[in-house]
Amino acid sequence: MRFSFFVIFIFLVLYSIKKTNERELKIGFLFNNLSGYYDDKIGFTRSAGMVTMAFKRIQDEQLLPNITNLTINYEFDNCNESKSSALGYNLSYIDKVHVIFGPSCTESVKRASYSTQLYNTQLFIWGIVSSSSMLNHKKYPNVYSVVSTYYSLSYAALDFIMSNNWTNIAFISAPSDERRCNRRFTDFQTIMDNYYPSVNLRSSLITSTPPRKTDFDYFFVLTKPFSRIIVSCFEMDVWKRDFLLYMYDNNFTNNEWVHINLEIRRLGFLSNNYDENTEKQFFYNDVYGLNDNRDDDAFKMAKRMFIIDVRYTRKLSLEFKKQTLNQVKDWPFYCSDCVIDNTTHLSLYSSYLYDAVYVWANLLNISMQKYGEEAVFNNFSLLKIGCNKSIEGIIGTIRFDSECNRITTFQVKGINRFGEEVTHVNYTFDGVLSFKRSMSDVGSNNTMFENWDYNIPLNRPLCGYSGKRCSINFFKEYRELAIIIIVVTIIVIIISILSTIYVVIRYRRKALEELSQWKIPNDKLTKPENNESQINQSSYSFHSGRTSKSSKNFTTKVDSNRYMYVVHETDLVVAEKHTVMYFENKEDLKELSELFLSNHPNINKFFGMSVDGNVPLSVWRYCKRGSIYVCLY
Image 1 (cartoon, rainbow, N blue to C red):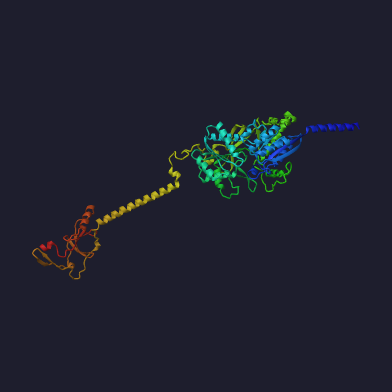
Image 2: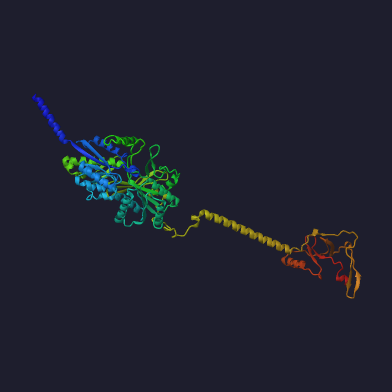
């Protein structure tokens, strides 16, 4: 009997010791269950399952062995600042939670921090919370962020810009309702002004939501006269694709232009959209239901851009994603209203929620081992003791500095000519504004700028921003038009030469014809037929009126050694034989032409000469009345 009482006593003592060592942990969550933009980025239905997956890992690794009872409280602040403040207060003061995961929007974090820090409640934030304001630990002492700040992103981007000797830049920001891009632009300006004063922001524009074509028009009106290096932030992938197509349509396609897009999503050129095989697609492909058949145009411009984004080393398997999505209906949320039947992928920032929960458990484990559970639960600021280390998150290594600022590795990514995403430069940060720069295996100018014909684009184009600083190479700029002009000119010259030759030949031929019109072909001189008829019969009067019959029968005329009596066409002519050889010269031609053209009633008609026969013949009209010689003698 005494032994039995002793055993019961020992059991009760051990049980009381165990109960003393066991501790209840109360955890709060602030989620967003709005549709549209927020659902895609941080929506509850597609994110909450990551909490369960993180707790399973925490349990497997025995990070919180003495925590036997977890109480979960969750609310929906929907990134409303007033609700975030009020719900944070309720979770801290009324529900007595030890830690809150959330909010997931920057301005909501600020308000929730004010309402919770008085109650020793720590905020482990995730989602759209990269603003540099989270680095102000005096103002927000209870905030721990697993997302890198825009300061580090901007620092890496500006170093990349300066390493290529680009000093004149432009910035375009296309924000959503959360205005994440606006804060990124503000932090970028702060880093540029304080650490890169040689970089000049020549133009900048915050577009409407969503951005319109007129916004892009105005941006390039501001930018084109002063810069060729564009830095951008787009809240939506489809807006980024629209910008590429705008550049393509407006001929901003030459090697002068460089587009640097800043992201902090761990996606690079990928979008959060999936194909039928549940594979993520490049953002420049039409995964938005546009059906515009312009993927090739967008791809051409994507090759002329870089994306600077957070490095990731692992991808989540399809099986893991499906399992995570289904967890929202089980412990600890038991969401019976959540519809996931048609959901195939997690929200964009859901992996950060996993990291937030897992990092918190690691910091709690380290601090409790150093200070003890009681000290830590009375002062959760002691969690910072475990910050200066690396922790393996869901898709990559999570690193913090001694102040619990998230530090990471940013990568400069590009698209090679084969359409493959490649990493060119790694910026491994060991502090918010301290990094080690390294080139990847393909990160050299030979490959980084292969889409720019292997030449680094100049800060100022050779011919200036206006293109008027050097003479225009007309043939290069207007090759097709130049070829057409040259061909037409050659044709006109050839036609002109041929026309000139034709005119000259025709003129000379006409002149020769005029000088040779006195020539009579020998076969045109024929002997008359003897028909015994009088060809001509007339009387002739001379001085005193003496008359004489000088009727002659032409056919009876006998050719002599000197004359021939022939017919030329219809005229009776006398052909005088010449014993000298005829040699044609210009003077003779001219003289004979003048003689041929001489027409006077008192001068016997000269018909010309026949020079193609055996002997040259000068042809004269046959004088019916005889010559003066006959009359006188």
